[in-house]
Length: 445
Image 1: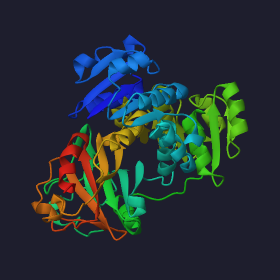
Image 2 (image 1 turned 60 degrees about the vertical axis):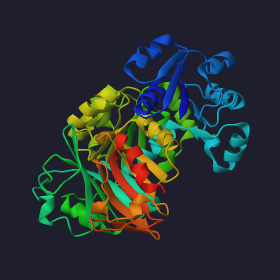
Image 3 (image 1 turned 135 degrees about the horizontal axis):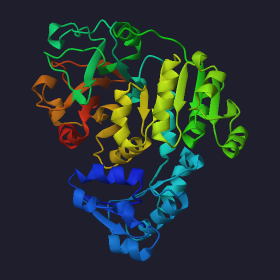
Image 4 (image 1 turned 90 degrees about the vertical axis):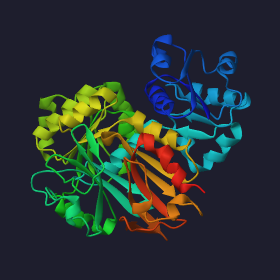
């Protein structure tokens, strides 16, 4: 498969690095040579200095007949123009990064496809969805809906009062069938639990269950549920704007933004939040805005360091739920080590979305888990596929992967080693990124 990426910014570079580990021919283009650096020496990809809207440069890059042309520069019009040109020059599929939500509306999909724009991606909207989903509960770090709600993934930080601590998986303690711990993040290590493993204090556990059993699981994890009604956003970014608009009017929302002009713009666009022209990292400002009475604090400025430390400050004031946008990948591990709440990275979210387009049709969905360097993948068991031939324990699945549950006839079901998957099942798998290609073979004829 031959893939061309225009734009060596955060999303383009991260995606190129991710795909370079696959058996694909990857080319990365940017107008600025310094952005490309030594990527072609460090990774298995080709780099080229050039403009994505230059016919000569696109031809020189080999756009004719490429399987997918991706334009993710910071400029929407340039991305759309580049994709239209790539389509006319022979690219089989195109994808453009945009910043106009209207383009994503379902009624406009056929319009853009007719023009040669097959896929559109708005990373800030994807990030906003992650925030609004995370804000539904105060006791989870992350909450991901799987298979249209049939199953749910809950990511939980274990404290000393949890019942699950010190229980080996081989003891039968977790054999109740009400939830399944699919992974444990311990420090920098991601663990797929085996019989002798057990949950420890300060572990981050990844749990799959049905909605009916969430309360039971919450109690065993030692968590109490409190409604999130009062929310402070630090930074008036596009992520904040989309998240606030999605949250609706039943929450008490404040947005702290230091830029006065942006505040004026926000006041015209958003009518369900109080816009305050102030620096959300200023302790006096936080006290004045009664941070101690806040249920959730969301830091989404352009500065990762400011977001991390603002969340830490909010926690010191007693805020139960904090979310930090951390776009510098090197800082993600630091943020988690400091016990910042949920960590958001829009380029990894966007890369997961794009990566899904390159997988087999049996892959229904891919969700990146930033904190675990892993992914949750939804597969469909095709007729005659290998996954339907034996019980799970005899399947010989790749290491660093585990089947969390299945959806059969619309109903979510947790699995064990004796479970037999049948054709048509939706199968939820937790795995490291490099294992997905190996797993695909189990779900094809």
